[in-house]
Each structure stands twice: as C-alpha cells, then as structure tokens.
Length: 211
Ligand SMILES: Cc1cc2nc3c(=O)[nH]c(=O)nc-3n(C[C@H](O)[C@H](O)[C@H](O)COP(=O)(O)O)c2cc1C
Image 1 (cartoon, rainbow, N blue to C red):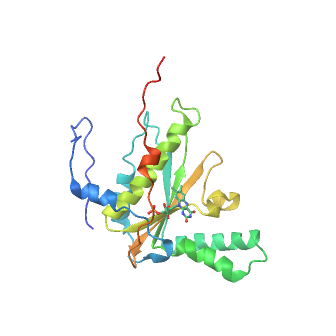
Image 2: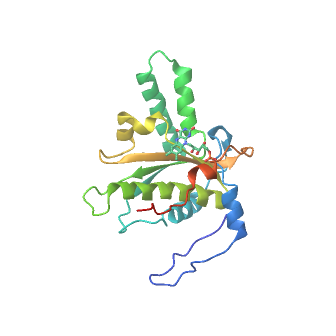
Image 3: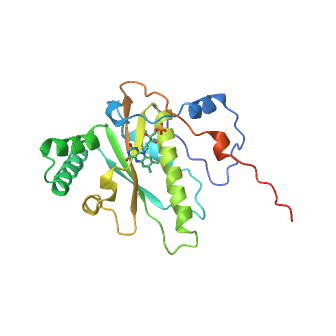
C-alpha cells in the first residue's frame, strides 16, 4: 500500500471527534494471525517506516519515548533465528536438532519481525509503570497500523524474550525489556474468532458508598 502519512505540524489543530463506522468495524474484527499462517509478502521498507511511525503516535506522559524498535529482515533475520535455535539446543541438550530447528523456524517464518523494546527512563518523573503502559500502546498501535496497511501480524514474546543470551545478542540493555516480537506478513488463511471478554464481568459503575 502506498501511503505516506504527513505528520501534522506542531500546534496544528486536529480533529478530535472522527466518527467512522469503518474504523469501528475494523476494531470489531481485529484479530491476531497465528504465526504458521504468516507468509509473503510482508511490508516493504517504506511501508514498514509508515507502520512504525504510526505505531509511535501513542499517549506518552511527559514525552519520555520509553521504547525503541529493532527490525529483523532478510539474512539478518535468518541469522537471529539461527542464534535462537543454537540457544535452544544449549538450554535443552536432549531435545534434538529438529526441535531446535523448529524454534529457529518459528522466529524466521514471517517475512518481517520487529522487536519492541521497553526502554524506560528510571530516573524520570513519569513513573516506570506509566512508561510501560505507553509501550503496550505502541504494541497495539503497531498491530493496528499493520492491519490497516494490509498486513497480518501477531505479538509474541516466547521464551527467548526473557533469555539473557538472546537479549545480549539483540542488543538489549540491562534496564530494558523485550515487550514482544511482532511477526508481520500476509495471512495464508483468515484466522477464526476466539472468545472475547464477558463485558458484564469487567465493567462496573462506581457508586459512592453511603457515609
Ligand atoms: C505481551 C504479549 C505477549 C504475548 N506472547 C505470546 C506468546 O509468546 N505466545 C502466544 O501464543 N501468544 C502470545 N500473546 C498473545 C497473542 O499476541 C494474541 O493476542 C493471541 O494469540 C490472541 O489473539 P487475538 O489478539 O486475536 O486475541 C502475547 C500477547 C501479548 C500482549
């Protein structure tokens, strides 16, 4: 898709009430696509920049920008996948090469993989908890922007997001966390719906307690 969002200029007035049943339908049908169903094509470089730019338009208290992206493409993605396979074998020496190969394949299966790194400023006035929430918003925006650009995707952590050795290979600092890997591509078949939360169970209306 060819779309180059022009960032609004500073102090430009922006529409705050944009009714759109198209967008509501889009949200109503939002769905992750299982990794095994993600095939070529994935976003090209210009589409990827657009997706990351739009993903970064999030609520961010005091503009800390507590996140960064690491993109895995082509031969570098294959190399990263190999490291994951090797590390899996190191941690599970009895599992065999085919299981390690599967772990490696799972990482490299989708055309594009993006690591979202939570990179908080621990000394900032904005609590780290709020900064973490901002990173979560980036993740959801990334999925939504990818879908709107015509791509399917899924947000996964897997064991290696928490593995010291892999974190080091991927350049993650001690104070940082991998919020997830975003696997993007085209769905070979449409995923089916899964149960959604019972809204009656999670929504309540606060009432003042009587004195
Ligand atoms: C931070 C985070 C990490 C996740 N990690 C995994 C994972 O490692 N494996 C997995 O199967 N699903 C994981 N998920 C869930 C999927 O992204 C996805 O939400 C799930 O498959 C349901 O699909 P849906 O998004 O259409 O509801 C994770 C979700 C989040 C928010």
